[in-house]
Length: 320
Image (tube, rainbow, N blue to C red; front, side):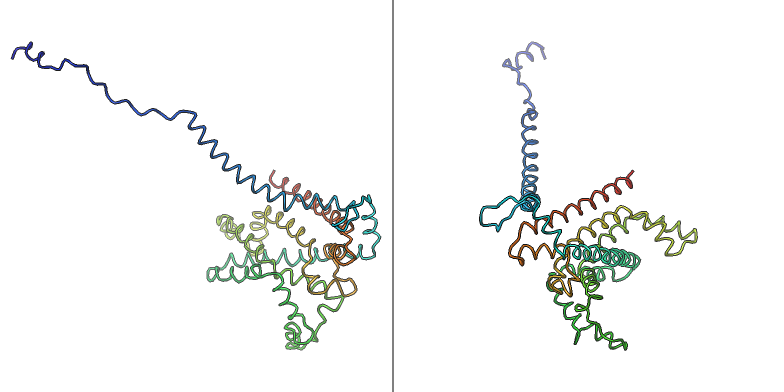
């Protein structure tokens, strides 16, 4: 066939271009999505900060201001300087309240700090019914505090109370658990330990499960017994958690209020009056002296800040 004829049959119109590729998203659109994502995150953060400032920071600031005022929260307050602090310090119950608070904290650390760690070690070694036992240990934490306190009020009853019945069963005389200055404070410590130990057990148990098993195997090959493994492996590997829980235990126990308020009312003979309970008495029992109660609260806050500072220093040294 003649090439001129073939060329004549070819279309003479304009050539078609391939379809254009879709344009890449502009930088502005990417920046817009990033900005929207950041705004959403900052929105949640601002909401959390607002709630924290409203229910945590503002009460602290308000308490510090009230400690220098004389007010009934209705009329215009009057600035009195350090008079509220002098009133609190000169109160005969002031020294007793601090003494009881430190004694309660010390006893609570012996029970509520050591016992949960020991229970966590036992649960960590078990192979059966571990989940059920965790639930049993944590159950008191889920109960309202008032329910636990009323339950122990029956346990401590000098007549048909459970504890005195157990003592009678083994041939021992009953005790006036809440009516004696010798047993009232330790009775409150038992209640507090039972109510709050579940959280500590679960925290310790989570820390124990993160310890590599190779360390225990190496210790067993070296002939280490159970107590040497705990001392040389368990405690060093959970040292940071132990320091953190120590601070939390001190802060919580030094603010004890529910137990003396519901069980003893500060008695007998002020044997269970704590700093937090004395604050309540100033504000709601002694004619509404909110300034003196706030002054006592500021003192307690300073002590707790000192404890937190020491704990942060120890934690920083451990991390190094």
